[in-house]
Length: 362
Image (cartoon, rainbow, N blue to C red; front, side, top):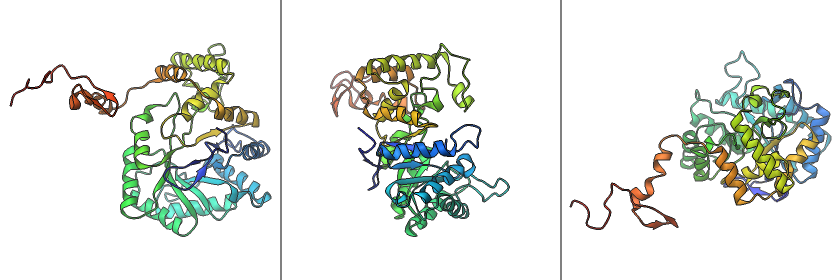
């Protein structure tokens, strides 16, 4: 696999690279991140390697991330139309205005207007709801997005950081009302964030939307930079987002990533990304990088093939219980099918069920 081995994003005709360039690090306005020059170098290297999927948001670095991209597009005519550009709405840049952010009709139109200005483009390929706005009816959000698709201002829509039940509701409403459907779901997903496998991943698979994970390296905790040997001596720019994950249990995982990487001549980050790329429903992983070197290291995961034993070891170290009723439902096979084999899966009869034909009350 390489960046130019494009995949369809969900149930759509949009083809994207298996690794998406995340630009939350574009601009150092938050006290960490990349200078304008380094951000542009990262973008240019990603595109040179065949990448075609760039993700930003109106709120990243106070709007500076979009400006950096827009300025680059302005200096490189023709490049804009050759890539899939995604940005997000919901984050307010006007904290004293209750309609400055969120997912209402007025807010969406205003946020899109300013994103288009900053990005110096007249359309967005993929427009994400950054996080579920529980104060706005989802019908209003969906109809507004559908209007914008019909007006040619956006091409496709997706949700980020939204509960599975709302994803399912939205996709059902879009289908029933002939509105533009979701094609992608952006969620935090990594070896240190597997709770999404309980509801969000199955919801995406059922709804036909492609999963684009963010936080695949857990804010750098899985990069290999932080180890038992240097615990407490290195401080992360993202603070608690990284440091709170450096527990004794998670160092066991980091040790395993290092060991597996040695066998494959790969870095711990590449091992963590390769594991995620092989998970059901994952279409394109969002990777951010402050430097070209970090970008190239992360993208090396595209050609890494883990063994079944590698995957089992990593999953055993990171397995998490699912919320009710999923663990309960996992035992339904013997309850429903006795000691038969269904869909290639062999079930065992439950001890309190009838053990042979006729062993029951009629």
